[in-house]
Amino acid sequence: MTVLVLTCKQDVTADMVVTELHERGVPLVRLDPADLPGEVALSAEYVRGDFHGHLSTSGRLVSMCGLRSIWVRRPGTPGADVTEQTAWVTAECEQALYGVLRCTDARWMNHPDAAARARYKPWQLQAAHRSGFAVPATVITTFPKVARQFAENHQDLIVKPISGTHPTDPPMALPTTRIPPDVDFTEVAAGPTLLQQHIPKLADIRLTCVGEQMFAARKASDPGQVDGRFAENDHTWEAAEMPARIAQAVRAYMRAARLAYGAFDFAEDNEGTWWFLECNQGGQFGFIQLATGQPIAEAVATWLALDET
Amino acid sequence: MTVLVLTCKQDVTADMVVTELHERGVPLVRLDPADLPGEVALSAEYVRGDFHGHLSTSGRLVSMCGLRSIWVRRPGTPGADVTEQTAWVTAECEQALYGVLRCTDARWMNHPDAAARARYKPWQLQAAHRSGFAVPATVITTFPKVARQFAENHQDLIVKPISGTHPTDPPMALPTTRIPPDVDFTEVAAGPTLLQQHIPKLADIRLTCVGEQMFAARKASDPGQVDGRFAENDHTWEAAEMPARIAQAVRAYMRAARLAYGAFDFAEDNEGTWWFLECNQGGQFGFIQLATGQPIAEAVATWLALDET
Image (cartoon, rainbow over the protein chains, first blue to last red):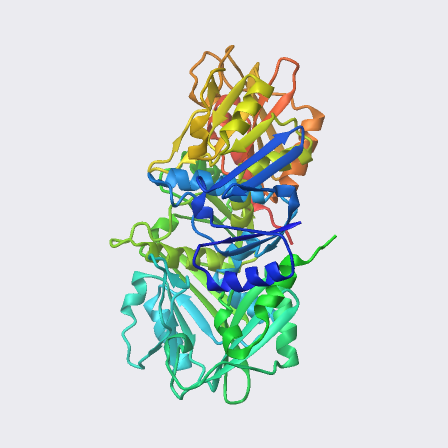
């Protein structure tokens, strides 16, 4: 049984897992959907209820019924490398590849449906609260007066994107930004805006969950620092102890979201509370593993190699 | 409790249902997501686990917790009417609107996750077979030799798009086309191609399923006619009797797909078998209702107005 890794060519994080799988002798095929059609080819036949499919990349063939698991890491857009690329070609390639893969019995990290849902921040906030996390007060609004009222109630605020990364090429992450107290909220009417109570924090926490395994890491914060992703400081990521109620909430969240992999970001306040900021279903883990030595790639490899019968 | 209808401005099919709901005195709000931000505004607040949201259109306010059901008819793209439209604005508006609506307890026709999955034709073919429909032999391939072999095995073939409509503006449906026996399949390598055994048919069948209710309609076919959508003939749509095993298969399919609405297309062969061609989760029903008098809009209104407690 084969592991299918869907990712782009340059992906150091995927390399770590692929190396691990190779060392264990687990058969795998790595391909970039952007290479369909061309280097990547596919076929699926439906005859009297039997479904026979196979994928090929660089001439190597793998049967769809021989897929053990599918890792959707950082795949390119199907059809993206076609000379005359159109929305039509992209749609046809996307529907063919993912449509056929959806017909297999393979386990997904993460299933595209679960991944799509887990990207919605409003859904995350609700699921996080229901799972037992502390969640900072948040508003998403196009009403300037709602924004003003929220600012009066919560004083210290940050603003951040709702949809995560800026969909340019290459995608760009916008930093979370603190809002001065006298800000003019008129522009909120121009587009939905996410405002959140600012949590003064001692540290950033990144908790990576792989199946049942969890890896918590902590990076101390300088006073007043808001978005750890864009701040240079002298602190580094270190493995962290995880409160029991956090582990329980993570399990509840992963179950509700039907995710096999999730990267949780928390702000640790000066009372030791971990505030849920977001769960990125496709979040990186390479930088955490390199800094802390936590065996996350090994855990991903173990999950992908697992035989569930 | 209010019904939310998400659709574009010009939508005769939506008009039929809206009229019906008005006559029954069911509160409803109709809006086009393209008008967010602007004519459409939204707000959602998450404070200590409580979720308070509201939508407004043309100054009229509706509470998110007062939504009974959401009909995703033919909505415009969120943010589409913004003067400086970018992928970024679209993503922010899409995530805000649908993210917040996903946090409500409203019933969906159809839920976006179910709708997205139900669009994949490979998934449809597998689900159709498992539900008990007769499904024509089909192949999706980028291998010319697989296409050639399939043509030899099945002789009479058609080709049709995998992804449904051509994603231009306005979207364009491509007709299903019969393939001459001596065709050169080399070009199959240029993009995934869907080939299907051609079913010589006496009639096209359109079966519209609304919750538990089903409406079957039949339109006789001229000999050799392939795609009823693009053929002018003297026949018209008439209400049809539905075989018991078809009703059973439709129920199984709707359950597997978690759809509240589906428009099934069948080809009726000269032995009376209904061959599954596709199930369009967003298919039109106005033309069927106008031709047959079947009360489909009424059924949609009933489903949307239902109180499930």
